[in-house]
Image 1 (cartoon, chains in turn cyan, brown):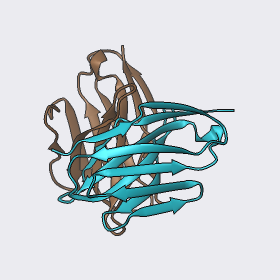
Image 2 (image 1 turned 60 degrees about the horizontal axis):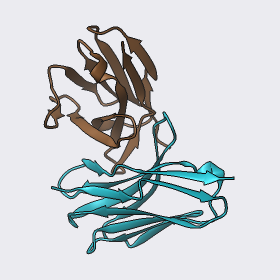
Image 3 (image 1 turned 45 degrees about the vertical axis):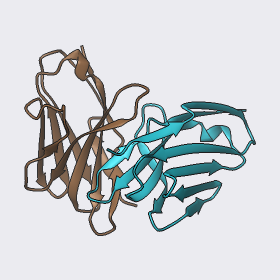
Image 4 (image 1 turned 60 degrees about the vertical axis):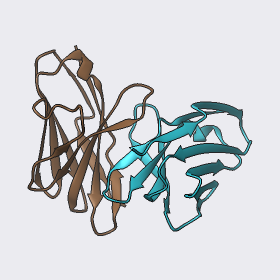
Length: 112
Length: 115
């Protein structure tokens, strides 16, 4: 059974720092992996999607990497800003269907 | 980009009443829609998968008679929480799969509070 774990559960850093969020999964047979952002009481915003054949994706200050063999993905945020404060979720899509398996999220606080 | 809407965004109801939540894909046809539930400080839990014109597939532990799902058209799925109780209070999020681009788009969520 696929399980997705995110570490740390919460992170607080000063503005301007570069930071890394971690996501690990137990079964390497994934179709893709996606990082989302969720603001308090709101829905989800897709940030980056990495196909199983890819090793990384970049969007602005965000860079996500994928190492299928080790079951790990990282989300790198450069030059963090207070507006980056949110909960970041990773989710893997299984090979066989469109179901997403979710991590519990990392709550990020960027202090001004 | 593709947009998925949910209505209502907030609902407060008395215990024992039924609540219907709508999920619409606004500019694409969604052959598959997913319903999730999220409790405070927890991640999303998939409740059920619905395909247009067929019965929904429920995840283990989700009561299909309590959470009625109807996916009658390619742009609309509804989740009805029947005889709601306080423990059903949660944040319900739907997503819709655009088959042409193989992407899921998420709705903004519906917060349900059962008194």
